[in-house]
Length: 434
Image (cartoon, rainbow, N blue to C red; front, side):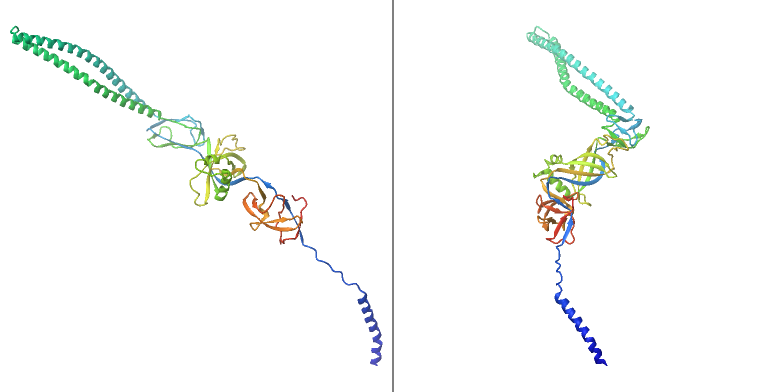
C-alpha cells in the first residue's frame, strides 16, 4: 500500500523541481551597489594676509605716582589747622594746611637783627677810628720831624757850648715822647684790618643766625607742594610736635601708576614690535616705550577706561609669578570724574592693563581653533578634498594664530575639528562660509 502513495507524490515533486530550475535559470543577477565616497560638511574661510598689533594684558593695583609726608622741621605747638585738612579731602597746591607756633622763631629773628645792628655800628665806629688815627698819625709824624730837627740843632749848639746840657736833655725827652706817640698810632692803625676782619666774621655769623631763624620761621607753615588727596592727618590743633614727627600723609592726584604683571613671553613679543628690528638699549628704551599705547580698565566695571602710557619696567621680575612688572602711568586720573557714572582712578583700584604695540608685518592670520595638535591646519584643496597641512605658528593672541609659513593667502582653511580627519575625503563648505 505504501508504494502507490510514493508513486503519487513523485509527479508533484518533479514538477516543483523543474519550475525552480527554470526560475533560477531565467532570473537576472542581483544589482551591484557601489560604495559612495566619504564626505563631511564644515565651516571654511579664505586665508588672508593681515597686519595686526600685538596686544598683551596684565593686572595690577593703582597707586599714586608721588606720595607726600609732611614732617615737622621745627618743634612747637600746632596753632592752626586748615578746615579741609581731613582724610579724603583734596587740597590744592600752595595751600597752607598747618601752622606751628612761630613766636620763638620771631624772637630769634629779632635778637639776630639786634646783634647785627650792633655789629654794623661797630663797623661804622671802626671806620671812624681808622680815619681819626690816620689824621693823628700824619700830624704826629710832622711833629716828629720838627722835634728831630730841633734836637739836631740843640745838639749842635751844645757841642759848641752855646746851649746848656739840660736844654739838650729836655729836647731829647720831647723827641722820644713824640716818636713814641707816632709808633703807638702806627700800631693802632696796623690793628684796624684785623679788627675789621673780626667784625666781618661776626657780621657773617649773625647773618647766618638770622637766615636760619628766618628759615625756621618759614618752616612753621606746612604748605601743600602739589594738588593732593589727604590720606591721614597725624596731629591735632594745640598738640606739641617735635622735629621729625610726621604731620600729614597724602597722595598726588595729578598722576597715578599701575605696576601690571605681564607674562614674560608676551612682553618679549610686545617689545619685538616696539623695537622694529633695531636693538633696544638703555639709552633708547624710553623712546621705544613711546610706540606702545596703554589702556586701563577697571576690572569690576570694564566700561570705565583710561588712557595711559608705558613709562618704565621695574628692575626685577616678580619672584612668584615670574612676570615682567611694567609700570603704566595715567595722567590727570580725576579728569571727567562724575561718580557714580564716571569714577576717578584712585589708589588700590584693581585694574586690567592692555598694552598695544605698533603694527607687525603682514602675516596669514587664522583662528587659533583652526590649528590642530599645535601645528596642523586642515585645508580644502582645489578639488574640495581635505589636506592636512603642517604649519609654523609665530604667535597667538586673542583667539587668533599668526602663521609664519605653511598656508598661503587665498587658500581655503577648514575651521571645524573633523572627526576623523581623513586626508583626501570630500569637504563641503557650510553655506555662508567665508
